[in-house]
Length: 226
Image (cartoon, rainbow, N blue to C red; front, side, top):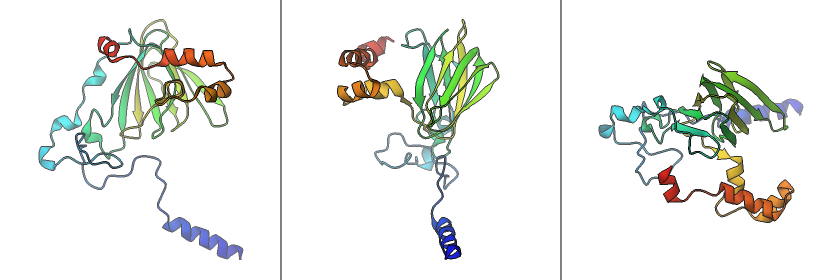
C-alpha cells in the first residue's frame, strides 16, 4: 500500500505543471510590449514585428542620479522595467537605480513577483529583510558590495552615511511590483477601516488619522512642482 501511494504521488508530480519562481519562459525570440494595447493578459500583448525598433530595447535613465531633495524620506527609485523598456516583455528581468540623500530611507516594502539583488554604486547602506519567522537579516554594505532580498519578503535600505549614496537593483521579473508597507495600510483607496488599524497596531484613532494624513498621496499640483 505504501509503495502504491508513493508511486501515485510521484505520478501526480510528473503530470502537474511546474511552479515557476520567475516570469514564464518566452515562446518566441522577442515579444516587445505593446503598452497601448487594450488586450489584457498576464504580461503585455506583442507589438507587430514590423513596428519594432532598437528604441524598444534601450533606456538611458539609470545614468542620471535621481533628485532626492523633495522626497518624503530622502530616496528616489528610477525603474528600468517593461514600462520603460518594452523589449523586456517575457524576458523576466529588470533593473532599478535607487538614489539616497544622506540618511535617506527606502521604507519597508516587498516585491511580490521577484527576488532583488542590490549592488552599491556609491556610499554606505544599512540593508535588511525579515523572514516569515520574524527574524531580521541585516548588514551594512558599501561600494561594490552585493546583498540579496528574497522574493516577497519585507526589506529596507537606508543611507547610513553623511554623503549621497546610490545602488542598482536587479530583479528576476520584467515588472516585480512594489508594496510599501506603511502606504499600503495607511494610504489605500478605499481606505483600510480605522478600527482594523487601531486593533492591529494597538494605537488610537487619532494616531491612525495622523499617519493617514502624512502618507496621503500628494495632489497633482504638488506632484507637478516636485
